[in-house]
Amino acid sequence: MKKVLIVFAHPETTSLTRHFADTAAQTLNAQGAEVMMSDLYGMGWKAVFDAQDFPARADPHRLSFINESDHAYSTGQQTTDVHAEQQKLLVADAVILLFPLWWFGLPAMLKGWIDRVFAYGFAYGYKAEGNRYRYGDGMLKGKRALLSVMVGGPERDYSPRGINGPLEQLLFPVTHGSLFYTGMDVLPTHAVYGTGRIDEAGVAAATEAWRARLAQLFIEAPIPFRRQNGGDYPDSHVLADEVAIGQTGLQSHLTDKYFSRE
Ligand SMILES: Cc1cc2nc3c(=O)[nH]c(=O)nc-3n(C[C@H](O)[C@H](O)[C@H](O)COP(=O)(O)O)c2cc1C
Image (cartoon, rainbow, N blue to C red; front, side):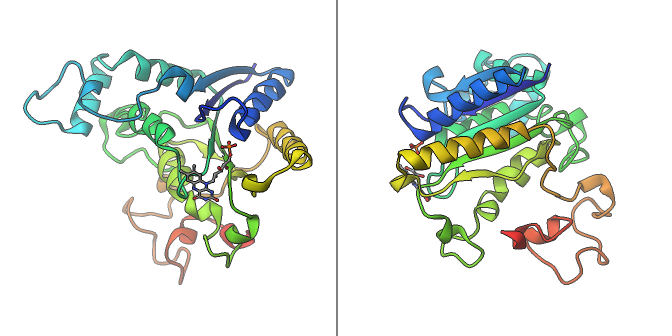
């Protein structure tokens, strides 16, 4: 039986985000999956990564987040809320992050979930080998990840030449920099546009599209990000001269013209 973790960030029960979280839980349950829900506002999730995250400090004089994260994780002295989320992630076959787009990014609550849960030794610094396992490798390798985003503005604003820039590029730090970084296979982002003016028929259509997307959760192809250890980055830092010739920036880290399809 597949296990899916749904992490969502919205305090209002009538919000589209909550409706999508509930729809995902029902749909996946009906597909025979086991669903775990992390309702961040409902849990009173602590969004801010701070000294309270390290009750037993390695160095009481200077707060180095990476060193303390390493120490807390490796010695089993993390806070119970962080540990519980990591356990959910470890057993999950897929994780879905559901949120409203706020200032072209994640609500602080969800950003804080990543900051705190993606610990050293767990989501980065795997096997105490620095950057050896990242971008396609790591402890979370083999899991699928999907962003489901409620977007206030119209799709046109996010089109290839739209004024906001394409959504998949705006969310690159999350899909590539946070999820693929930890080893997960990241699916193309699911978006509902124009939520500011959506009517009942629009919600019904969006719900159907979301259900159809969920049916593909374990089938569809992930975003074709290049793997650090797949040969395209000989020194693990920069693309080889013969790879993505003439390309720079975000697109060069994908193996096909993914962004230009938008
Ligand atoms: C703090 C804040 C920032 C927002 N930033 C954006 C934005 O950057 N782009 C956009 O299209 N909509 C933006 N919106 C609109 C939200 O995306 C919209 O309210 C949301 O999709 C509605 O879904 P909900 O019912 O789940 O809250 C913002 C809203 C708030 C409250």
